[in-house]
Image 1 (cartoon, rainbow, N blue to C red):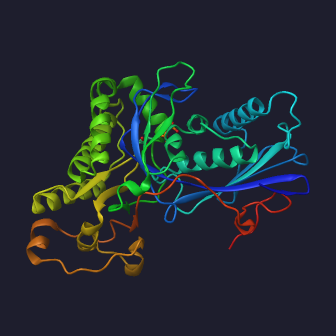
Image 2: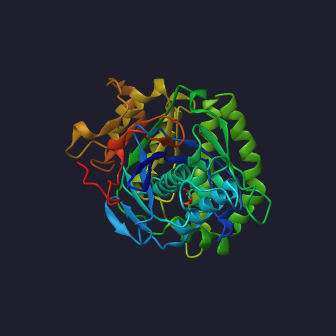
Length: 398
Ligand code: DP6
């Protein structure tokens, strides 16, 4: 923690995660307690990350928050809940009469930015709240179980507090103390696993997940059945596939769970549609590709938006990316089509093109981001990376 003129300052980064067994529905909207446990893969911060600087000073007169350079309302309840929880843990840790290094009544300034489009269905709130809680916890010297705090910002954020393969246990207690994230395996567990994010739209999603899932809880009998009868068995099966690095099992279950989540959205009344025609074209393409090879080589999953996330093993990626280029020819920025980890170009066998590639839809996939599983939140020690300057206000970054 840097201290300048009585101001304490911390900067962290945090990852996005993608659920393979989805969280959809709360049993307690205040504490953000889910109706079912969920399981996710944390994505690497080299490609997708939130960076957050949190500062506290006696000179600050109010809590202030900047998101991607724009000041927004810091009074929002979820932000305040995280702040309150971190301060409560700090108070508990210090004891009542401990002379505190940082006065807990100081106001905070927080600046946060994503290196990917906000609210595009890329779980920006998960990385955002995980990063906020990580930075605040460092600021106040709090350690230990922080996923419970991040959960108060956004349910899926609790899973971004850990790297690799992560389960969020729904918990049984009404106070939510046991509704926490747990790492099942670190990111190094499955070195060949790769992730392709197919960005089909950078638009804000039509129905946000918070409102969408509440509407599903209120109206969808399928959601209730899913939470009670389907998810528990799927969780143990998914954990086993991951443990055994069984891509076929992992991939099939990932696709089935994504499909069931979107089925609960359709079962919601009025129905919610997150997938669009491009999403459905990607689903069909993945199935044709797997059928051509006679096994599951790629697996799709979709959250509350039209972007697809594809899992594949490293040796499948060059061929599948070539299939994507043929199916969704880049409109103009051909060089920019593939971003993130490099992929070797390959020539596609004609019989594969004939069997797998349907009528090409130019420009339908804006770009593909190639990444892999990664670690949990990180502390940045380089002062150059702080988003707030010595005056506690956003720095002009390039
Ligand atoms: C479809 O965590 O964004 O991505 O708890 O209301 O903030 P709130 O919802 P949020 O929901 C994520 C839903 C999902 C599935 C998942 O990530 O498990």
